[in-house]
Length: 376
Image 1 (cartoon, one colour):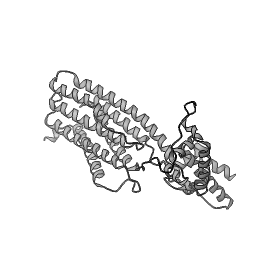
Image 2 (cartoon, rainbow, N blue to C red; image 1 turned 60 degrees about the vertical axis):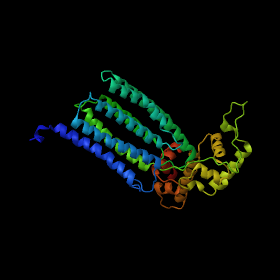
Image 3 (cartoon, rainbow, N blue to C red; image 1 turned 45 degrees about the horizontal axis):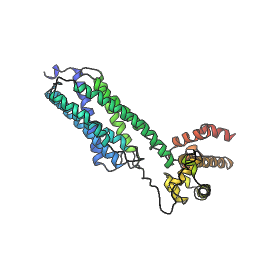
Image 4 (cartoon, rainbow, N blue to C red; image 1 turned 45 degrees about the vertical axis):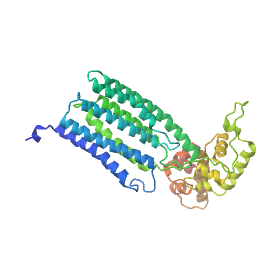
């Protein structure tokens, strides 16, 4: 009889609400207890990222739990308990979101304490709302929080672009290292916050909100487990002269100040120890590893590539693409069957899609189009 009095909309909502509460709990337990990687067994995610993501999923689970208890036992949005839950929920969620997103960027360790400090005014406004319930402090707090997250999203845009340049300067293989998805997750979190601000208990947005939450949880878990731990790249100081400084009387940037003798030596060493030995075929070859092979440091090697208007990633890609083209021409001359996928792997690429994109950027045409022309 009691169930007959409950509308189908309410039952559907609580089912959806229960799912969005259980999913982060499962994700948190998975990240906390499982040592292996169920999504990509050959990838070891950053430990710091896993910990922050676990904290975010845990906070999300408890947030769903205490909001459920609030709706069951109180449902008074003008009460002190409501303000306390809102303040705690926002403080913990936004802090763990910031920590998770920043942990995805591995070019340097970005601290989370500025985000925590920026939340202090929001906390103060929440306390004032408790003591002065008739004042619109929570409305001010909502606007402040929205502005704060927009500023954080802008910061993430520039940070992701900086991280992408760092990857190109230091890594030959970029499979699963590009973190454009970090920006998507960041904007999804902003979108969720806007929905939370506009949503009503009887609004269709409430259902859409929980669907977006589920998508965000799945996206975040997949990103955490497919982002590999990158080795920290340190500048080697031993047995290497200091990096050249730009002349104060010259308008030429520091990248062009590499002495000609050092540049010539690096070019010879690259030919001997990278091109001739086909070191460029090694997977996950880093700038630091190449610098060690050619008997210099990564600072000089970076300056060498910059002086030639290229990046480390572009340099390795050029060698690999040339290797692919030579392999294909040899296969034609010897009348052997060879697929582009296999030749791409033999040329140092882990992923054909990565090779295909690099090939098109360098040659201005697709792999298949180039192969047809070569066949003729």
